[in-house]
Length: 173
Image (cartoon, rainbow, N blue to C red; front, top):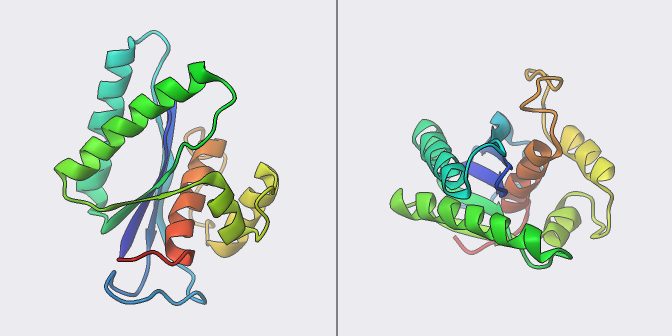
């Protein structure tokens, strides 16, 4: 099974692709270490209009889906933001990501940051650094250049975490 994890945003969309040995119709083995196929970020610029940025996110999501052919997409659920100016653009980006998934017939599972932290670290209030360290322990990232600009961003690790959450967290498939 191929899981595409997504951390939505307008400026930066993190993505992570995991490969597991079991088909999606079977329960995953929690002792299995999924293989990281790809991860990074879709990055837009502030010089672009909102519509242009959303179009870039949509087109790049379409390309990721066509390239990796995921069985499921796991996306971070936006459940609380302190700043309404932040939540609106993120919601718009999430909308075009959901549209890309729907257009390609890929089922989507949503997880909150709290659920992701619980699944990976075992503590819902874990710091980003703790989550990233656990992701590095749970996944073999040795074949990837972690200093590459597109891979060192928090968003890429958050996407891997969301993909891992779909792997570790029981969801009805």
